[in-house]
Length: 169
Length: 189
Image: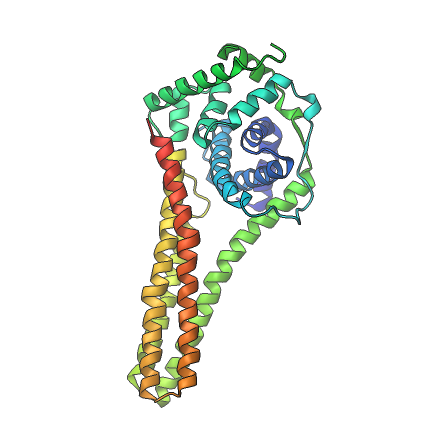
């Protein structure tokens, strides 16, 4: 595959699946600086993965897998970095947040997802995006029954927390 | 709020409007990071190959004029290192850009890579720094080297040993433990 072909596919994927990437970025990174950093990492991994994509899975499934893997790894690396310091010499920001266009209930939901552990965050995103237990199991590499137990716990936690939240409901 | 309501709110979101992308900056950063990552590992490998090749050549040339056992042993050690780095570089190039099918598989791959780095780091101590320092020390005994040379060479080897050990203990092993913890979390229940 030539570099220009890879770049073309990258542009197509970015154009067609940006919403998916944004969801993952928002669920794993809190401030603008971190969201930019994670988006950059996910984009790089997405670009690198292009030659390995054989078309066995849907592009969205492939991209979810890459974005979630990257976000989980980034998240643990970030925990170590936070104890240190932030980079001051950041280049141009890649993302511009458009917070005013978001539903406040959605902001609350993202806040709740962010409080889950790294693995459960992935499952919550996949669940909300309508992936089946089988698809989640394939993506995560763990059994469907294990997924079921985790999902049950996540749903229970989200519903319980929502009882304390009244805005817009 | 029940879960169905949350699902409805989730489905109503328009991800496209959550952020605006600065596409030029993104392309530049992807290019920069991609090249930087492969440049870093290439630099390390090529530097080690060059340094050890030069050492092998010098020791072999010395062996022509001074057919002593030490020169052959030194040349053999450094040549072995070159072969090892070439082989591991070849293996790394072959597996570049391969993605496992599942998250657990990906984690396993990351753990395997970290293990390889830990192994490589141990090998640097056991198979490179220690044999080379024994070799140099033996040669210095044989040549009856002055005390200041012993101190300088010994100090440098000790420093190299400390740095490699520090890197393994403070960077590679914690990273591996982190990945293992994540894997346990993925498999728990």
